[in-house]
Image (cartoon, rainbow, N blue to C red; front, side):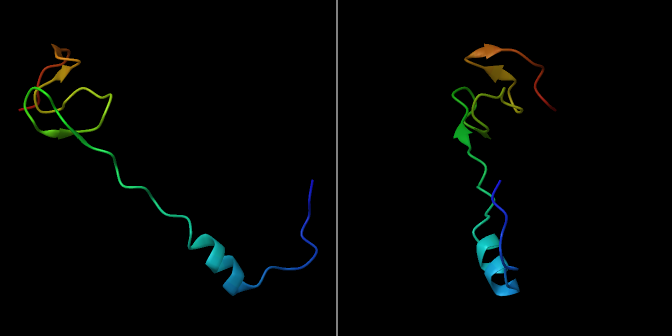
Length: 59
Protein backbone atom coordinates (compact mmCIF):
# COMPACT_ATOMS: atom_id res chain seq x y z
CA UNK A 1 0.00 0.00 0.00
CA UNK A 2 1.27 3.48 -0.84
CA UNK A 3 2.33 5.65 2.08
CA UNK A 4 2.87 9.44 1.83
CA UNK A 5 6.52 10.45 2.11
CA UNK A 6 5.77 13.98 3.40
CA UNK A 7 3.10 15.57 5.54
CA UNK A 8 0.41 17.24 3.43
CA UNK A 9 0.05 20.94 4.21
CA UNK A 10 -3.14 22.30 5.74
CA UNK A 11 -3.96 24.36 2.64
CA UNK A 12 -3.51 21.36 0.34
CA UNK A 13 -5.66 19.20 2.59
CA UNK A 14 -8.40 21.81 2.68
CA UNK A 15 -8.23 22.33 -1.08
CA UNK A 16 -8.69 18.62 -1.63
CA UNK A 17 -11.59 18.42 0.83
CA UNK A 18 -13.27 21.42 -0.82
CA UNK A 19 -14.22 19.13 -3.72
CA UNK A 20 -16.37 16.89 -1.48
CA UNK A 21 -19.86 18.22 -2.15
CA UNK A 22 -23.22 16.82 -1.21
CA UNK A 23 -25.37 16.18 -4.27
CA UNK A 24 -28.85 17.65 -4.38
CA UNK A 25 -31.62 15.13 -3.79
CA UNK A 26 -33.15 14.02 -7.10
CA UNK A 27 -36.90 14.65 -7.26
CA UNK A 28 -39.49 13.71 -9.86
CA UNK A 29 -43.20 14.50 -10.26
CA UNK A 30 -45.66 11.86 -9.06
CA UNK A 31 -47.76 10.75 -12.07
CA UNK A 32 -50.91 10.58 -9.92
CA UNK A 33 -50.91 13.73 -7.77
CA UNK A 34 -48.06 15.75 -9.38
CA UNK A 35 -46.33 16.26 -6.02
CA UNK A 36 -42.52 16.13 -5.91
CA UNK A 37 -41.16 12.77 -4.68
CA UNK A 38 -37.94 10.79 -4.77
CA UNK A 39 -37.61 8.37 -7.71
CA UNK A 40 -38.29 4.65 -7.12
CA UNK A 41 -40.07 5.43 -3.82
CA UNK A 42 -43.80 5.38 -3.04
CA UNK A 43 -45.31 8.87 -3.08
CA UNK A 44 -45.78 10.08 0.51
CA UNK A 45 -48.75 12.30 -0.37
CA UNK A 46 -50.95 9.88 -2.36
CA UNK A 47 -49.35 6.52 -1.48
CA UNK A 48 -48.95 5.20 -5.03
CA UNK A 49 -46.00 3.47 -6.66
CA UNK A 50 -45.94 2.42 -10.30
CA UNK A 51 -49.54 3.70 -10.58
CA UNK A 52 -50.75 1.28 -7.86
CA UNK A 53 -51.86 2.11 -4.32
CA UNK A 54 -49.23 0.58 -2.03
CA UNK A 55 -49.44 2.55 1.23
CA UNK A 56 -52.01 4.66 3.05
CA UNK A 57 -51.51 8.33 2.13
CA UNK A 58 -50.26 10.62 4.87
CA UNK A 59 -52.83 12.98 6.32
